[in-house]
Length: 426
Image (cartoon, rainbow, N blue to C red; front, side):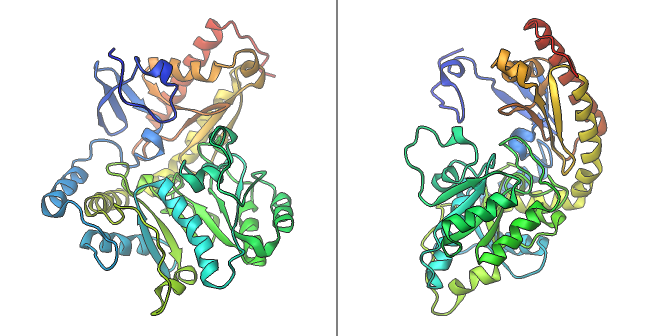
């Protein structure tokens, strides 16, 4: 293959440069490469293809809007009808009706928006010392400046020099550690705590019972904002529109992206509570001097509206709840394999397996080997630091779940045999 000029994200370009897998087209839960090989998309691309691939009505909505008004700035008082309608729809889908919506170009934009707004909100209230942001170990919040600083994945922060100051990571499930961080930093200096409902890219960790409710209570006690990062968890992945509703949470801000358009065009945003928005909506309020060039992009908004219509009409949120148990049970069956130590999931249509530490120590490439073995057998899964995750489109069936697990099992067998790994499953 010709040496590529495309620098891929999160890629070892020394090997990728001449060995790209070029995806050519897709339909529902399947994608095909340029050689005609078919793959079950066990990751919904990157957690986001909720309604599946090749939805003609979304493509038609995009084409119709692009022919009418492809794009226009929304800075100042400029607006467009698709952006207005989308924000109204997004508020309708959220619990309560006291939200405002700040639109962005994607998840990283949304996280940076929320964390900057947290600081700006307190400055507007005369609490300019509230600058600190607390996040969780293993949490992933994108790769922009603020999201990198808040990342709970150390590898994503290494080699870039000092991150944005005033950020702290705490162990992901310890309320004691979080409260200790508040005390060490000084409660009057903490602007916000940010957390995914289910940690995704950092390892796929559902929260311990009561943990996130405890985070929210600590934020209320100490006057900090509670930010839910729903970029992966929103729009059906956890069986609800934003994910946090299933846990009975009442956040101050909610970041979203990915599933809002099912990836058909890039769009994200932040749900912002009335209390946080109010200072900026007052007649003499300050300007939040922040925003993406394509915020409120009308064609992207049209794609989102068409996608939301499909999610609702086809009851795909209900489908996610129906299938989360079968998916987790099927993935849990892989713990009988001598290479697998545990399975995680059960909350939402996503699950993961970890490979045994002994195998990863003996053969550091074993996760990548299983990933490639599955792909050679027609299944795309997501490699994590210690295992593999699946998050199929919400249109998947139990038959697809069975195929995912069967393919993973044969892939684990093939890698164990080729690497001569023989571990005692007990």
